[in-house]
Image 1: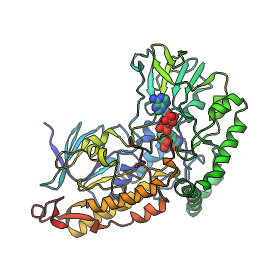
Image 2: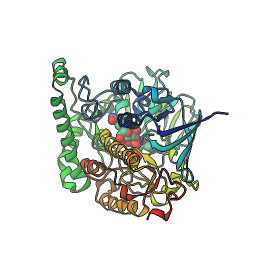
Image 3: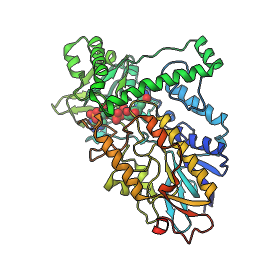
Image 4: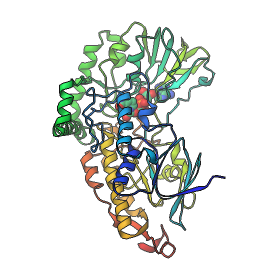
Length: 502
Ligand code: NAP
C-alpha cells in the first residue's frame, strides 16, 4: 500500500494558476510544497489545446506573468506552441519543476476537522496537506454534445481540446460542431486541406477583426533592452481592454462602436447576402465572448465549406442527419462544443469535513466563493480561477495573479499569527456574493444568450462583473478578520468551522 505524503501546501494542477502559486509561494519561503499534475507536462490548457490554429486572443504582452515578461513573443497574438514553450521556460527558470509530480490525478480531497488538514487521494498515493490550492483551471473539462447516435459514428470523433493529431484530414469530409472561440480558429486552419467541411452553427457569433502582426527583430531587441517599454505597451493593452468593461457591465451604449465594427467586418468579408444573413448575430454583443478573427468569414465563404444551421437530429455511422431529414456525410467529426465550467466534475471530488462536495454546496446556491478564492466550510482551501473570476475581455493571468497575492498574504498571515486553519465566515461570503449578484444583474451577460458564463439557473457566477483592477484591490491583502481561525498550538480547543471564534 502507498504511503501518505505529508506536506504543508499541496497545489493541484501545473497550468498558469498552479505554477504561479508554486512560484510565488516558493519565493515567499514556503519550501514544503508539492504540485500534483495529472498530465505529463506543465501548461494546462496550453498543453491540451493543440488543435490547428490554436492561439491566444489576448495580446501576448498582456497574456504573460507580470514577473516574467517575455520580449521574445513573435507576434501580437501568440500561437499556442509559443505560450506552451513560455510556460515550460518559466517553470524551469523559477526552479519549480522539481516540485511537480506528473501523472498524478486527484481523485478526492476531504477536509479533516479534527486535524485541521486535508486528506487528498490520488492515482498515485495519498497526501496529507494543511493547505490545498486548486489550480485545476476553469475551461479544461471538455463538454461533449449529447447527440443521439454519436457513439455509433464509424470515423474518428474528438474534442478540440483533445485533438487527435494522428488523424489525417487532407482530402476528407470533416464536420465541426460549434462556432465558439475554438471553432473559429480550427475552421480556417483546416478548411484549405479538407475535401469538404460542414460547420454546424447553432448561434452566429460576433466576430471582430484581429489586429495581429509579427514583431520584427528590432522591436523584440528593444523590449529586451528596455523592459519599461514592454511594460508600457502591456499597460496600454490592459487599459484598452478595460474600456470594454463599461459596456459589458454598466452602459450598453458603450458597446455601440464595437457592434458597428462587427457588422462592418461581416459586411466587408462576406459578399453573398444569404451567407451574410446566416452569419449575422442576433444577440447583444458581449453577451457571449466576443471573438477575434480575420479568417473565419473568409473560410466560411469557401466553396468546400457549408454552414449548416438546421439543428442536428442524430449522428449515424456515416455522418450527421439534420432535422429536415438531410444527410450530411462525414469521415471525421470534430466537436468544438466548449467546457464544463460551472459544473466542473472536479467539484465532485472536494469534500468538507461532513463529506459534502463542492458540487453539492454549489448546486443549491450556485457557484460562490469569497473573493473568488475561499469557500465557507472548506478551511484552508484556495480555489484559483474560482467563482466570479473568469473574464471575457482581458487576460485571465491578471486575475490569477490577483488571487496569488491573496493566497501568498494568507499563508504569510497564517505563519505570522500561528494559525492552523482559516475558514471564511459564511455571513461574510454571503454579503460579498449579494453584492456580486447585484452587479452581475446589470451586465450584458444576462441579456438572453447562452454561454459558459452562465449556470443551469441562468445566473452568471463564472465571470467577474467589474473592472479587473477592482478585483486586484480587493485581493491585495488577506483580510484575516473575515475568517474563523484555529491556532497551531490549540487545534482541538478551538474547533474549526464552529462558533468558537465568532
Ligand atoms: P464555447 O465558447 O462554449 O462554444 C461552444 C460552441 O459549441 C458554441 O458555438 C455552441 O453553440 C456550440 N455547441 C455546444 N453544444 C452544442 C450542441 N449540442 N450542438 C450544436 N452546437 C453546440 O467553447 P469554445 O469555443 O471551446 O471556447 C470556450 C472558451 O475558451 C472561450 O470563450 C475562451 O474563453 C476560451 N478560448 C480561448 C481561446 C483563445 O484565447 N484564443 C481559444 C479557444 C477557447 P451555442 O453558441 O449555440 O451555445
